[in-house]
Length: 119
Picture 1 (spheres, rainbow, N blue to C red):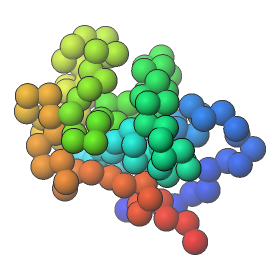
Picture 2 (spheres, rainbow, N blue to C red):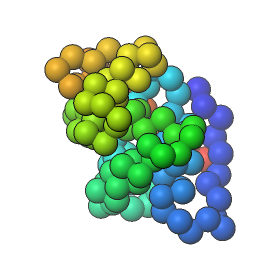
Picture 3 (cartoon, helix red, strand yellow):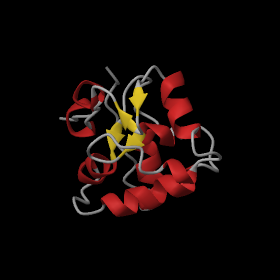
């Protein structure tokens, strides 16, 4: 289990806050754009999280492959260097992918609302 942290209140940049959460997703797990948006208090901001992930490929230490759509589909794969790179990275994380979808999505799903619950 990931140790809960408080996101920087001083950092108003939404993309940076998204990246803070994405860096906490453990190997072998994945989450959705919407789950991150909800955690950050932007329930309808899943598209904005997607834009952040599109820009993340130029950054170090942001495992963008671990963020997929709400059904476990690799909808962001076209933003990686090659059409298969996202799947390759997920497989190297220990996540099984078949037909551009994470197998056992419900078991793999990492919900920041519960995993990063801060009292």
